[in-house]
Image 1 (cartoon, rainbow, N blue to C red):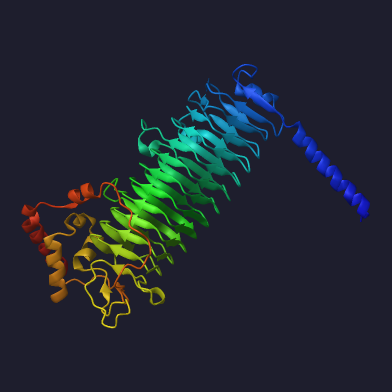
Image 2: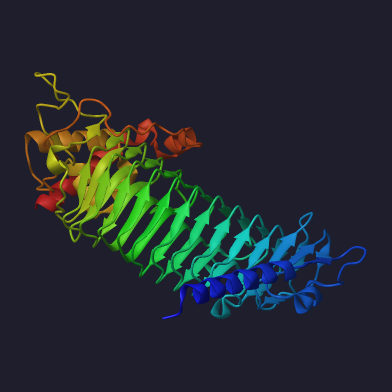
Amino acid sequence: MLPALGLRALAMAAMLTAAGAGARAATLYVGGEGGHATIRDALAAAEPGDRIVVRAGEYRERLVIDKPVRLIGEGRPHIRGDGIDDVVLILADDVEFVGFRVSGSGVRMMHSDAGVKVAGKRVRVAENELYDNLFGIYLDRSVEAVIERNRIRGRADIEVGRRGAGIHFYDAHHNVVRFNRIWEVRDGVYFDHSDHNRVEDNEFSNLRYGVHYMYCGPNSFSRNVFRDSMAGVVVMYTDGVVFTDNQIINNRAGFNACGLLFKDCLNSVAERNVIVNNVRGIFLDNSDRNRFFHNLVAQNDVAVVLHANSLENSFGGNDFIDNLAVLHTVGRADADWTPGGLGNYYSDYTGYDLDGDGVGDVEYRLQDAFEYLAGNRPLLRLFLNSAAADALAFAEKNFPLIRGSDERDTAPRMSPVSGVKMIAAAGQAEAAETRALPAAGWLLVFGLSTLLAWRLRA
């Protein structure tokens, strides 16, 4: 063991070394008087830890950053690629890339061509504008990166299925994505075998999916806005995702659009989210032991679609308000609608509360005959909220012909309980108009529905 004096000497030497490294850090300039002509020249001349300030202008070059430097844009300089490969490739750890416009990546999906590709650790990519790229930002096995305050727009000239993601994670862990605005890409953020990442305070719109998880472990996202897409959030083959305080609204781009979709998803938690004005609010297929608590689920065509292969899911303390249907089941599904005695609020509940404890004395049946049929035959959703659907539900209640699911809330709340406020979803009036059938068609609808019910019974 070294004597105390030797330990102090070693500590002093380490401090002096660190101080010397800090003292050697220099600032290099690109563009303008006295600056390097290209960013690549400045990168070649820089030492680890140096700061490179790039002045306003257009720089037609592709960059490879292979040393820890801070690359700072002054006046939003534009790095324009040549349509081949990545525009900016960050290989080193501890790099900052801040304040640029980046465009012109390649379009090779197999090579994941990107505006900015990150393969280093502890990289910060912030305050950039990325457009005209296949992928916006691609994290390739990156760890502890921070992606914040960027604006990422996809290529509207490419069909949506052939675009890349705004931010793509591949085997990338413990990263943070926050305060970004992403639109017109394929998926806002795509996670592939990536765990322990946080997605916070972002806005996603006009996409296929806002966030898309595939084969992931625990991740979390909070306070994001997902709107005007085919789906707000899609979680597939994933375990342990936590969703809190998000707004999932106006996702109607297609007949099967939805707000929050789980496919082969386990042990996830959704709390205090606003899920408003989607074709389907929550969708569960082969997904078990997921929990939905204190969410506002309102003005959707169908609040919840539940497949029979989805087991041990629970819904408690949620507000279901003004949905055309609360539940569609595919097969005879089973979920817990009163976990721990905590029921939900339903705006169409007609029961009473004689003892005044805030809990209805009559249980709430979540699904009538027509809703059961529509869950198994999606085209019948065209007749949701119609006179024919009401007539079939009334007839089934009094003269049962069709045995559907037996989903019941035994402790329905008399007033909203989630604590989440309604978010005004733009375009609700237009959506309502498109869902309404002309009055002249009700007789035909009634006849078709009655005939279908009779054939099913026979």
